[in-house]
Length: 363
Ligand SMILES: C[S@@+](CC[C@H](N)C(=O)[O-])C[C@H]1O[C@@H](n2cnc3c(N)ncnc32)[C@H](O)[C@@H]1O
Image (cartoon, rainbow, N blue to C red; front, side):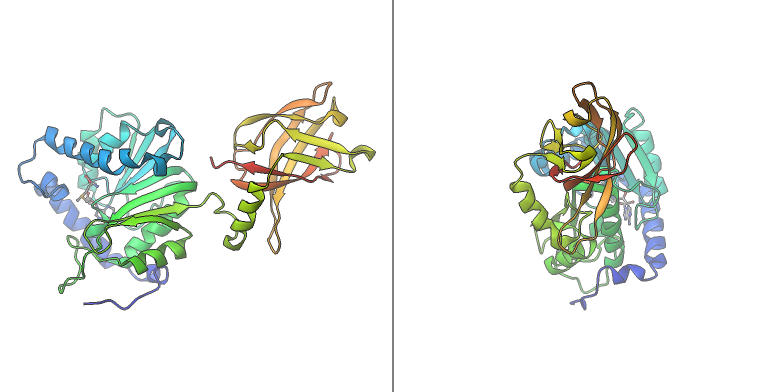
């Protein structure tokens, strides 16, 4: 039985309360009757050791084997991750051994109670009973990786899945991955319920990613129960999509990160970073010999044809020594991407224009 295509984001506006109530009450009942079986239905007679060993194996298969995509050279131990539908903590335990901080959300308070008891020895785990459709209460841009396994396959409505994808995008930092598995198998004759959830086609998955701002960097298992999706939130997520390729080209041609003001204090002023790629929160040496002995602000904005400029301050008031050297602390909210260093302000004076580009790494 095929479903008429619907706009994934429009569908979020629908009244979801019926589905949410059903999911919550069915999963609470399952958690109170046979939690291990309903979490991993391959076996009826789980003992704790095998149950958590199963979670470890799933993490080895889905996370350890995919660290290049997930971590992008960052150490996992410094990453904060999100698991949607953490259940009794079967995979959360294994994830917490690898990642710096793991947040698990689940619609069922009975599941969250089990997870709380099972993971009480892990100080880097935070558990949240959520509303079953989004991540309300979790901060925006706070997570470096989001993950979900054998959860969305049980969700009976595309609108709920769309609502999650939309909110995961909000919570991920730019330059981060949402890896998740959905039901991709053939639509059954009976309507989706809280056990056999709604099916996602590749076309729907791509439409959903596109509507939410993600790029689909990989997919596997289309048409099966284990349809995996890799949704990437681009580093340049803050920038209008049509401008991202221009910015990437600028990055490729970047030779130096010099910002030059032609008119500061009546003469040319060179502002030079000690590297061509800076990180929000990082500290970098700058040299501005012409302004030795004073204090400066360094500002940026991204400008490209037709773009609304995005502006901010890279570093506030840094003192230059007698040779014009200083260490600037790059503001933590400096957006990732290629920014044009446009302004330098010295000793409380007026902003003056500067010229130059610098690449800001994703946090
Ligand atoms: C089969 S279990 C899997 C648990 C865990 N992912 C694992 O692999 O051990 C499915 C879990 O998803 C949760 N769940 C189902 N629908 C959900 C929803 N809409 N939002 C959040 N959690 C949900 C259930 O309460 C249950 O804990």
